[in-house]
Image (tube, rainbow, N blue to C red; front, side, top):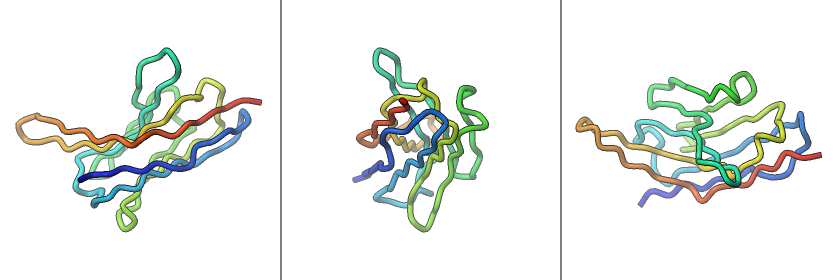
Length: 120
């Protein structure tokens, strides 16, 4: 049973920083990719950042240069360092882990979500 447990959300002023953590119950290297998604009220869930098993990263245009995704294989944890936060970053952030098989089938696992609120 795969479990993803997020932590690190909270309330921060504009321009501030937060670091989100996602601890997996299994080796992070067992996933094809891991990432962070977010969902603001009334909006669809969107990809924020992702990292592949090989360490390749990609980011949403809105967070490039401000957010950094990283992975600690020994701790089975993925991080999202968020700097220069803006009010529009306010959302529930979800950790995602995906296994993508040769057939193209994809299995997704999700954390419970952590609230990030950017407000003065």
